[in-house]
Length: 103
Image (tube, rainbow, N blue to C red):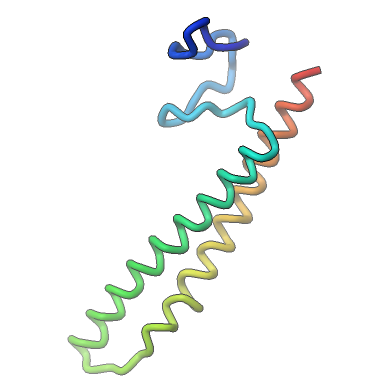
């Protein structure tokens, strides 16, 4: 169930495999929590940046005066909360599965 002796080969005997080279099993609690937190922050900054540029175009082309701080509150924060919710569920499930299968 583990990697080969060098650690560079694929995981053998595993049914879960990997996604984009990212193993889908065997995370510890701290790793799962860190990955969930990082994915939420990534989503926050990505969606906020996209929303700021979209609002820049909206304000300039259509002569509106929408406040740019609204992108943090209405786009960035809800997307981060949604990603954190999904990521904590996914990585929490992977952590629990690893704990159950470790016995």
